[in-house]
Image 1 (cartoon, rainbow, N blue to C red):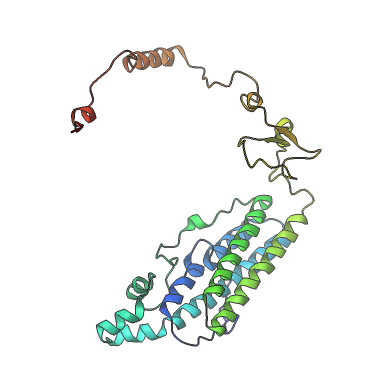
Image 2: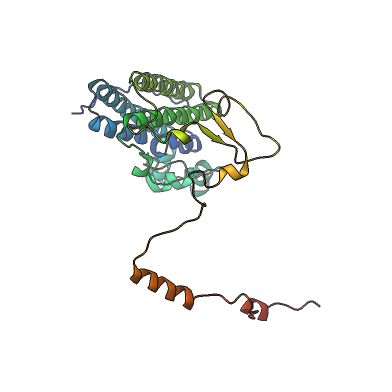
Length: 290
């Protein structure tokens, strides 16, 4: 059960309206690494989680992400406050156009949403549930959550670097810092599991689980802990990189007699004649050299 508190989690102060900045910050409202995507990811994971500790953590963080969504939305609407009034009251067209344009899609979001906040990213692409990549398997989801928080932290960092309003920068810095805290919680929860790798239950085929195939060879080949050491078998022999499971490396299927006969008919009917030299439409229309 959710109950709304009218006090924001973090105070929002905006020095002056800036619809272009508002449009950029919209990325963290309805974008793939934004607060709504995070809230829905952790909320759905929390509903499905059977471990009481992880369930509590996920629902706590999901609810906090909704509060972050409110902070981001408030920043966007405050930055758009001037243009909202200008559009509503019919400011002189040339002046209004100058105020809401400037190299971004801020004019589009301002016109469509009246200076409000929309469930889109900064390019106007609508939010989608495809941003939620949960698999309800904690060893996989917690790793994905760590990466999601890292991506969100980087976006906030870039927004901070683009912002010259100290109060907005302060609020963005708070949101960025909370991404770090959540990463720590998710990583602690991951390693609190007695067995966390590999993800899932099945261990994998032992002959391939610690093999490194050096598939991209040439200048720039590097060795490091990712492909060398006692735990790794390093394979750079091209012959040993093909048909690694045995066999001749071809694809085959067992067919019934009926399907085999039909397949043979298709092959005979569609067979190419390698000795032919047909004239094509492209050749007929080809311009002759002057």
